Image (cartoon, rainbow over all chains, first blue to last red; front, side, top):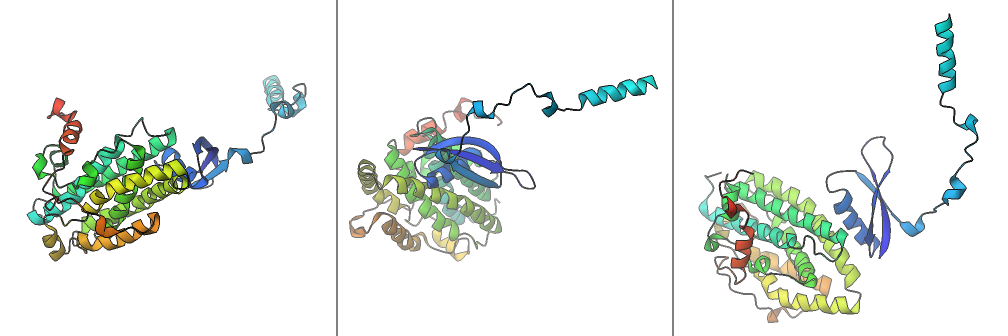
Length: 90
Length: 244
């Protein structure tokens, strides 16, 4: 048995999204089982199945940034606060 | 609806009852199918068959509960294949393939029906049957290659063949259905393409040795019907007047 990750895409511009996973003996079985388990209520109009062993997975430690770089986390709050203060002062 | 020819009604009930009982039998696997994903898929297929039954019952009556659950056993027109208990997964899978392969042929003979609702229902059902067949084939492709699974499946095939061939016995009312253009093909004429499909799938077989039961134009129930009938009606008999 192999594990397949199931991705679904709705009509329109929305991207493919991960819907879940399933276990199946063959790719064709994964197709028919994914249809009934994940798309029988019309949850998507396109489907991708990816054998989990084909996924390039990256270690969490490698992905984690150093959190001491506030300049990479500009959410505009400082600028907004400064502008608010300026408006109040004028 | 009530103006439908009584003989045509009989003919359509044979198909409706097959679909109803096939759906019932499939859904007996809820919770006990061989693996979780198949549990969901097989129940969903059973639900499709129940849906087909409901659509067919609606063609002949406004009261589908009455037809589905409150007739006397002798008034059902199901074939013995769908009445058969299949408590072994090999049996259930083989029946799924045999039944759905026949079902496609039956719907195809209704696509141009003189009853326009029926043509629409047939086209809708055929879209679902394409999936059902693909599902059955995917499982068989995976299982027929391995020794034990193959042996068990072929044993089931031998056991279920006569009953499956019995599906093609002309049901009561068939000649009226053909004359009125309700159906395009006699059931017996579907036997040959079905046999071909069976041979293509499982290898050639000596069909002269397959002896289907005499179901008396679907008027006879098999020995297994009574228990199934009781089980189907268990809930509704708690309160036959309940509104769903």
